[in-house]
Image 1 (tube, rainbow, N blue to C red):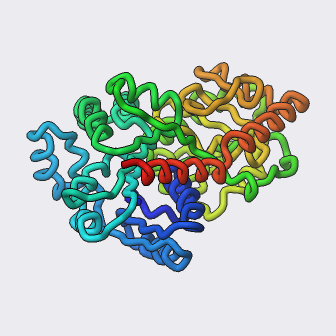
Image 2 (cartoon, helix red, strand yellow):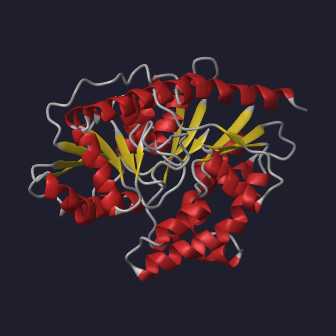
Image 3 (cartoon, rainbow, N blue to C red):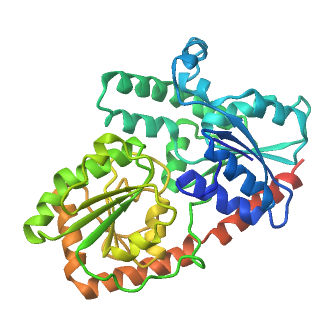
Length: 392
C-alpha cells in the first residue's frame, strides 16, 4: 500500500482510514506500506508500525517550494496537474519496481503515478482509493483561498485534474470511493468506470459513548487546522456563528482542537474561545463538550470526525458539505444547517432541549454501529482483494 502520510499516530482523515484498514488487513496478510515522510516525527510513526507487524518504508518529501518549480512546470507543459510533481519520490518508485506484490493499493490519486513503475508483464493487481475527488476538492478550496496566487494555482490544478483523474483511475484494476456522492462525481466524467464504495468508519468498540458533559455551555470543533477548509470553518464559527449564540448564551465556550493551527486561527483565542493545537487524545475535549460542530464549507470525501463524535455520544451540528457522503438524516441523527443563523439555532436547540438531544445521540450511535464500523469495512476490502486475485 502506498500512502502520502505515515498513518501513525492516526490523527487526520487519511491517517485514520489507512491505519484502521491496515491493522485489520495485517492480521491475515503480509503487508508492506510505502509512504511519504514529511518530518522527523514520521520516522517514529514508521518504526511503531513496523514493530507492530506492518513493514513500513518511508521516502522524504518537502512542502512545495522553489525546488518543485521546474518539475511542476514540466508536468504542466505535459498536460499533467503541476501539483503531482510534489508527490513522487525515487525511493517509492524503486520499491514498486523492485519487489513483487499480489496487490498494489494506492491511497489518493496524487500518488497514482507510482503504478507506472510496476514491471511490464507484472501479475500485480492494482487498486486506487479516492479519499476525495481531487478536482472537486481543489475547486471548492480555491473559492476559500485569500491570496489570488493560491486561487489561481488551485484552479489550474482543478482544471487539469478534471481530465487527468479519470484517466489515472482507468489504468487501475479496481477503484474505491469513500462515498456515493464521490462515486457519482467521478462517474460524471468517466461513466464507463466500475467503482466500489467503501465508506470511512469508526472503531465503535474502542469509542464508547461518554457520560453527560459537566456543563451544557461548551461546544467543540476537531480538525486538521492547517487545512484550508478547516481554517475557513473555525473562522466562520467564531466570526459569524458564535456572536449569534452569545446573544442567548453569553457564557458559551468554544474549543478548537487540532494540529498546526496557523496564526489566523491562533488569534481567535480569547474570552471563552480556546485553541489547543495538537493533542494526543481528543476524547477529553468531546467529554467536556455538549455539542460537536462541523461548519465546513469546502472539502471532499467524508468526515471521520463526525463519525467519531457520534460514536462517543455527542450530538453533531454540521453543514451539508460537512456531512457530505454520510448516510445521515437531519433532525434524526444529525442537525444540518448552511447559514450562520440556522447553524446557531441548531446548536442552541441541542444545548437546551434534552429529550431531542438524547434521541439524536441514540440514533447516531446506532447508525455508526450498523453502517460505519471499521471491521465490516475492512472485511469488504479483503473481499475486493479476493475477487481481484481470482480474476484472470
